[in-house]
View 1 (cartoon, rainbow, N blue to C red):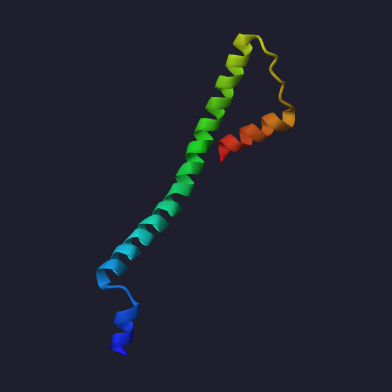
View 2: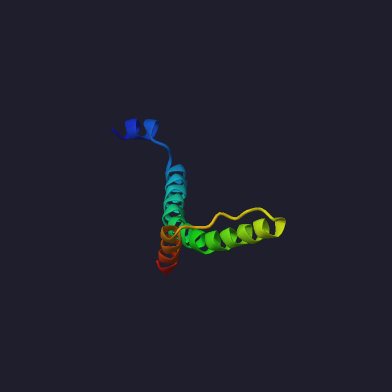
Length: 79
């Protein structure tokens, strides 16, 4: 039985290295999602305002947002 295990399974250092890589990837994925959401919430309004100002300076017509769109934006800021 022992010879079958030693023939078909990798050695302990390889198993430990692979487990460490998998654990690191899992923790990174779990942490990255909330950080990405927070970053997106902070960056998106800034980019939107910047684009709007650039369009105004270039003389392009800026689309007026509806009341529903403005309300939705304000609610997204509160979360």
